[in-house]
Image 1 (cartoon, rainbow, N blue to C red):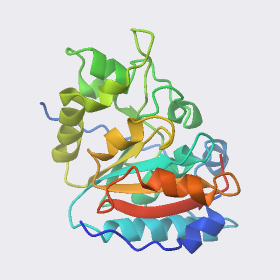
Image 2 (spheres, one colour; image 1 turned 30 degrees about the horizontal axis):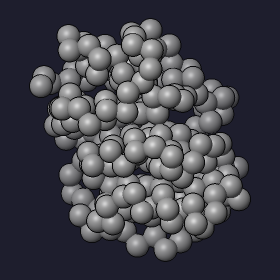
Image 3 (tube, rainbow, N blue to C red; image 1 turned 45 degrees about the vertical axis):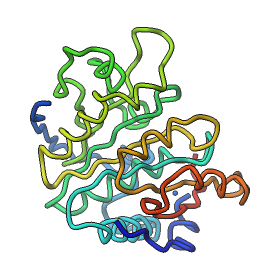
Length: 248
């Protein structure tokens, strides 16, 4: 895969404040503008945030240009508080603007999960870590509707063993899960909400299973040295570029 030349993703940088088949369950409930705002999700319709929406649409279009098939995108913040979860969530939402495509967001930040809270999802059946710990767990129980058509969430879940192990991301079961989720539906695009790229190897390990990597830098938070160090963790052939984000 050819890397995208994002020497400056100006539109988003300035505005983004940025082993079995899986049964598809698609929600049909459209969220109201107030509910979208409550979840920090960009709106579908024209309005005051149109430039922000277009910025995400532009980023989505650039990612889609990298491959003809569905792919896995790792969205990794440089550090905690950079807004990686916000960008991952809304980039996944933007894929669903196209009625021929669906998206799956997976919260891989096992130590500081946030997507189920942000999206107001009651993760009563657990999530990713529960699936990885339990060989008898079924993928279907981990897929949650979000209120946005064609967008599902796999939350991080809660470990039954207490301490979360980084080695989960190096496991065969993790790789098998992603392969199964992607191969089940040709129109499904997967977004991994990653732990920070600096301070732990988690993001680098996840990037080995992704096709493309988007790095999120907190605007005014991360230095050029931080960004360069974080970017150095990833395969240049997968690295799409940096999004400067103002939203936590």
